[in-house]
Length: 123
Image 1: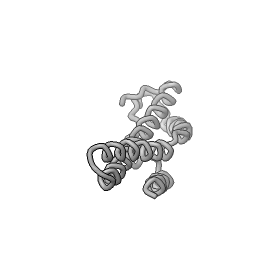
Image 2: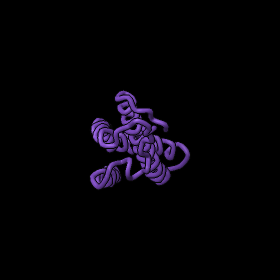
Image 3: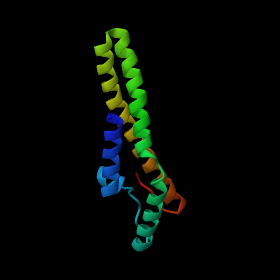
Image 4: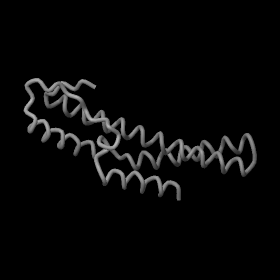
């Protein structure tokens, strides 16, 4: 159930705006000699490539792996109640880690795409 909720939250956020708009991690380029209209078109195309990064799937995988590790650790140090708490904490941490990895991968795709199109990316 938690995995489903996390995936739904990420999907809802992604539908409202680009990840870059939500996180404030837009690429910064050297604008000297750059045609702004052409850059905007290229940025949209590069963001379309970055849409192929499966952030929700990475979050889901993180939830599952975090829950397993947290549950095992909780079972080792305590009882079934501790195992359940450990699984819950691990799921949250794993999901957050998965989302973070997905966002970083998305940023790399956009920056590499822009560099490949001749822009000087500064960040």
